[in-house]
Structure formats: C-alpha cells, structure tokens
Amino acid sequence: MVAIHEDTQDQANGRWRPMETAPKDGTEILCFTKYGDYEISHWRAVTQCWVSKRGFFVDATHWCPLPKPPVHI
Image (cartoon, rainbow, N blue to C red; front, side, top):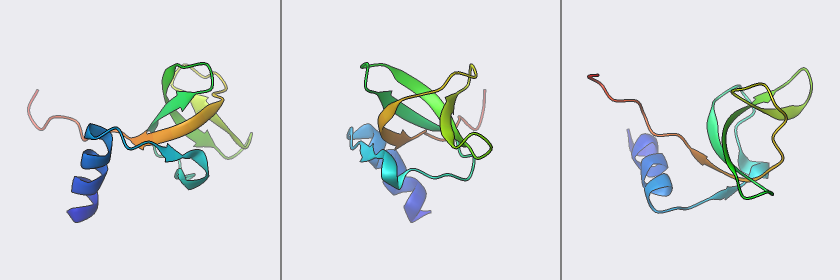
C-alpha cells in the first residue's frame, strides 16, 4: 500500500524519474519524450525499446507511474 501511495505522490508532485529506473516488465508508464511530448508506453522485450499504446517507438527521457484507475466508473 505504501508503494502505491508513493507512486501516486510522485506523479502528483511531478517527480519524473530517469528512464534507467523504469520497469521493463511490460508495465504501462507515463513517459516524457525528448520532443516534449507525453506518451503512455511500455517496454517491448522483443525489440528492446519503449513503445507507445499506438505501437510507435518512444524516445523517452523520463517516466512517472500511471495512477490507478477509478474503482467506480
């Protein structure tokens, strides 16, 4: 529970982390690119690169965990 709270706090406080620390287990994360864009991305082990939800290569410089989705929609 503490880790979830810390991740949410990091995002809320704008604490971007270097890409070297990003999870490479397929977890979707919010990435900031060298072009000043934001992309929801995940690590694709087969191609050894970060890929957006749209399937494009992402040249990210920093990342932040995504918040948990709402419980009730």
